[in-house]
Length: 344
Image 1 (cartoon, helix red, strand yellow):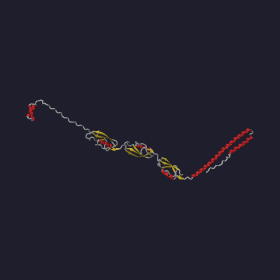
Image 2 (cartoon, one colour):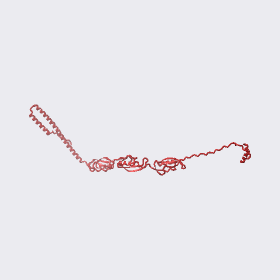
Image 3 (spheres, one colour):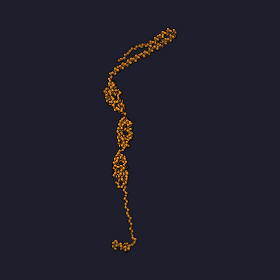
Image 4 (cartoon, one colour):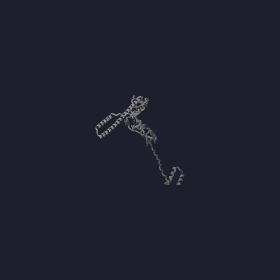
């Protein structure tokens, strides 16, 4: 609508201005009747002029304040009219009821709000009791009537605040349980396994593994060492040194070879072992094996008996009697004996 221009009206003098004017006129009347000197009269006129000027200024000041008050009153009236118009327009906005959203998932809450023309703003918060992803609170209670297209603030659970599993590998079982329970966790299972690296009763690993986030009150499994794995001692008697060593290594055992010399036992074979067969031993146990090594002694060659060297010539010439005796003994013909004698 076009603005209406009002005509300017002269400001009416206020009650105080009238009192000042009446006082000034009374002052002149009294001064005129009582003052006879011209000089005094001039002073009175000047004073009167000053008073008139002051009165005029006062009228202007008070008049401007009155105009300002009128303007302020007009502004208040306009504001009231606008508020009334706004109120009448608000009455046309559609109202909807806020549904119950606590306990729903975020997707379910969004669907219900959209059905009623409402929006939402999510705020995440940890919770020990409400599962992650579910609504745990809403800023406007269910059943409240609100303008359509209003925004509802929803508090959504992100689950309990998690704790990080500490590195307690190598701890004694009792100490590990104490540490975990002190963090608000539960040791639900205790498993045992053989280990070549950790002594009996020490923690080998955790499930979940070290460094994993776990919810407060969550379950943790600890695996405890049973010591080194046990193996069965094989029977090595009668085996060669090489075969015995290979069999021990196959079982996870170590061999220490000791050579002995026993007469009557098989040479080059194991005749004794430090652990009996079929006993249980830890992996990497050292087993002494005794291998018979008999050294043969060399035989000496027989010595020949010395023979005497015969003399080349007899010391005495045989006599005739000796010749006859010789001839009879050997049975040599006489001619031969004679020849032999001649030769000598």
